[in-house]
Amino acid sequence: MRTVTVALGERSYPVHIGAGLLREAGATLAPRLAAPRAVIVTNPAIAAHWLAPLRASLAAAGVASDAVLIPDGEVHKTWATVHDVVTRLLEIRAERTTTLIALGGGIVGDVGGFAAAIYQRGMPFVQVPTTLLAQVDSSVGGKTGVNHALGKNMIGAFYQPRAVLIDTDCLATLPDREFAAGMAEVIKYGAIRDRAFFDWLEANVGALLARDAAALAHAIGESCRIKAEIVAADERESGERALLNFGHSFGHAIEAGLGYGQWLHGEAVAAGMVMAAALSVRMGLVGAVDAARLSALLAKARLPVDPPALGAERYLALMSHDKKVLAGAVRFVLLRGLGDAFVTADVPPTELRAVLR
Image 1 (cartoon, rainbow, N blue to C red):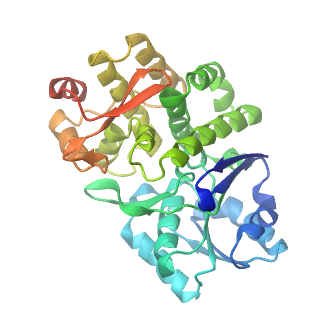
Image 2 (cartoon, rainbow, N blue to C red; image 1 turned 135 degrees about the vertical axis):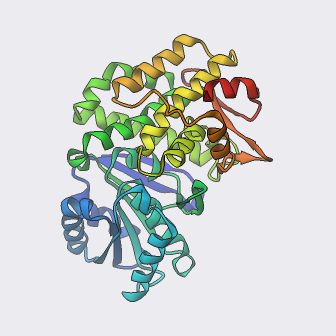
C-alpha cells in the first residue's frame, strides 16, 4: 500500500492506494470514524460488485452500516438526487457522527460528498472510488456538488473527506470506455505539472490499457501525489489549483452542449485539452510538436481528440456560465510546454474563435 497525504493542517487526510484494500477497509477506516456507524452511498452497478465486501469488512471492525443507492449516470448528478440521499439519511436517523462513505465513481463521490457537507451542517465523509477517473481526480481534494442545466458543477461545496481508500482491484470490473475516460485525467497531470511523468505515460500507455497492476499503481500514485501537492497549496482554487482545470473550460462546454451523459467527463476533457493545446500553439506559447505529442497520447489511450462542432457562438455561450469565469472573463489553462501550464484570461478573441471553429 502506498499512502499520499493531502496536507491541510488539522484537516489533513491520507489517500491509501493498493490492491485488495476494500476488503481491509474496516480495519483501515475504523480508527478515523467518529462513531462505529456508516452509511454507504453507491449505485446498483457498483453495489453488485463491491457493496457486500465493504459492508463485511466494516462489520468485522465493529462498524454497522446502511446502504443508500442512487441512479447511475451523469444525468442524475442533480439537486433531486441529493435530496433523495438526505431524505434517506433522515429516515434511518443518521447522526452528525455517522460517516458517509461514497463507494463508486465521480458522480457518487460528488453527490455523496455534497450530501455529507450539508446534512446536519456536516457529517464525516470517506471516499472509496471505484473508477479510474475518481481514483486519480474527483475523490481527492474535497470538491463536491451537482450540475445545473446552465453549467456543470455549479452547485456544491468544498468538503474534504476524512480519508480516501483506492483499491486498484476495483478497476477489473470497469468497462473499457470508463477506463479510457479516467486516462484523460492521468494524462492531464503529466501535461500540466510533470514532464517526466508524461514521458513515462507515453512509454507505458499500452501496459496501462492492459491494466497491468504495477503500471496502474504507479500512474494512480503519481496522479494523486501531484493533485495532493496542488490542493495543499491552494485548497479553494484561488490560484494554483486552477491548473487542474486544463481542458475543462472547453470540456464542460462539450458536456453541456451535447447533453450530460452523451460524452463521459474524461472524453470531453480529452477533447478540451486538445483545444487548449491548439490555442496555446496559435498564441505562440508552445510548439506544435508538444501539442501533437499530447494529442497522440490521448488517441493511444482511446480518447476522442476531435471536438464536436457546436459552433463558436454556442461554445462561447456555454463557457460564459463556467465557474472558472472571473470578473466576466473566462480563464483558460494553457501550455508553455509539456509539464508547464499556467492560467490566464488574456486570450485574443480572434485566436479563441479560430480554435472554436
